[in-house]
Length: 361
Ligand code: FES
Ligand SMILES: [Fe+2]
Image 1: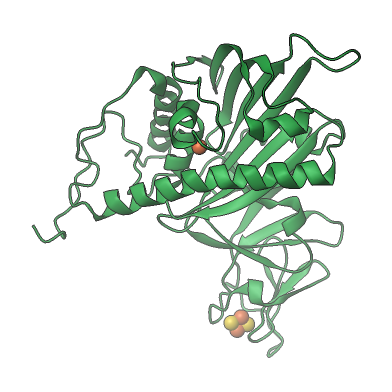
Image 2: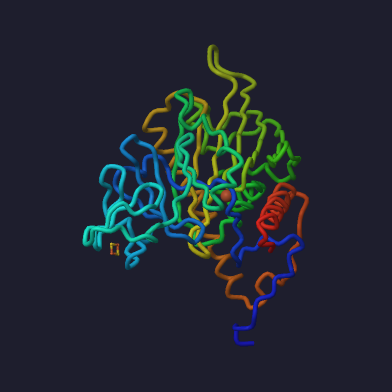
């Protein structure tokens, strides 16, 4: 075997397509954090497509295919002039619908100089994009009001992960790995039994109650709880779309100090976006239902979350690398455990969507 044999893909009972083009197009994906998109063009690969994002004069976001139809210069290297984006190479201008409005070296606008534009919507702290058929938009991006609600403190960060997006999606819908992969960071080592999993409409859910135990030190400071105090908690996960999921740590302190709060929520937010083949944009969020945690607590909490998420990044990248290199590819025994219930729903939804788009795995 020299490693060049064709990869077969029958080993997974429900394929996740991690070595293929395995992303639906007809859905909302996140394109960027709102603060990233300004009147200066932003280049980003989304669904293996170069995209340029920028803001119009009225502040609305716009997204175009990031390639000038003249000699293919990236428009993201150019600049925004009012509502137009100007190519850096020979100055052709395009409006937010991708129509050429000016070719400076000639009077006539070239007739076919049109590039694809994509629908974008700003919701919560992010800008969402629909990369598929533009006339098949049949829903709004998921509700994410808490991200900009002043009663919540929203910490967030970004990774580029050298792994297929579905590995991250499955990882964050199965948090039983916390007791093992993150035993020295999250230190929430009681999570060793499978949660209940169920569907609520199109939303994948999991839920599990835990008895009195100290809360992960990652979240104590944000809630103002001591690290050694036994508290009750419920872990609740929701995935309203393959693009985004939430993992709530619902905390109940049975013996609060006088006048202190007894209930808190920390809402993990996991946004994945397929980038180029084998790479994924991952925006994470950690929101506390506490109006304003101090900068110091926010900074320390963020730093300790990053140390824990680095453990995921490291493992998922090695998994991707090794599975890609192995000529057996996905054609290898894959065992499913009781704790994989929510992850199996993810694969079922993915397969259904790809089938509906005529691109089954
Ligand atoms: S490559 Fe854009 S104007 Fe020439
Ligand atoms: Fe993790």
